[in-house]
Length: 400
Image (tube, rainbow, N blue to C red; front, side):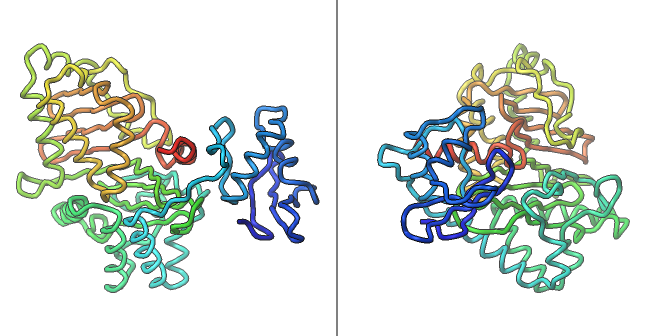
């Protein structure tokens, strides 16, 4: 239950309100020009974002929800808890709890200046920044933000690696090291530097309910973002992985390319022609912007028109990207994909480059030449956790 001074939300007059019960006579509201108003009355008056009152009956239900989980915003239009008005509280994912421990262990090892470099508020504009060029790599040529391997001592580097390992799979960690090691092949230090990769945290890493936080790890040919709520709901995009100056023995993205090549070769001539339909464009990579325009929904060949073995290959292509993250993040992203309808996805192929696209996301693999590739996963509405709260509320109230 809430305690005196617990922040409840921002009302539609953009002022903060606090919930309190100093006399044990029921929760009331103060702040924003209000004093000693009952919580149901306040909700009935202020919470509707579309005008008009919700009525005392719904306000009572909202009150029951809020007093059980104070600090969690309300999404207008979402369904409400079961008749008993209790919201089931769940434990954080074990892997996320490890991430939080590793994150805080790393941050505790930094001095004050380093902590200031590594941490940003959840609402920081920096959280929406997306870049994969070599340093400086910041907006308009400014220095990249965050804390880099190159600015850490050996103990701090190990702790930073421990966090990244907790957030990714063993395969993902191997790809990261493969991408970093290729910087040695490119030469020209410190412009090309295996230690020129930055980690940034947004919000405070926590397993607590209602807490949003996230991180970004980026440098040349690498920029992946994960937004987290309740340590159970994840938005692991945008995610860019690239490589250059590789060969068959040291290509960290070999699986992504080989699987698509195998799928294309398994198609009939007619299917190959379909797969090449509307194949141009890599705006998901080149745009680097907050929202990207969806690709044509009739592009390429429908996964529903493929045989079972070919469908399995499409699934493995997707897993090659999703599987870069740890199991909890990857499995929940795959569950979301299943709800979209696997057979509704499209496969588009053109001379080694390809897309796997749906109505909510796109994967782009852009082969620059025989030793240089860019790839990205973008969610049309979910990059940087844009739909995180809505999706979380939907799952909470539907029991999913």
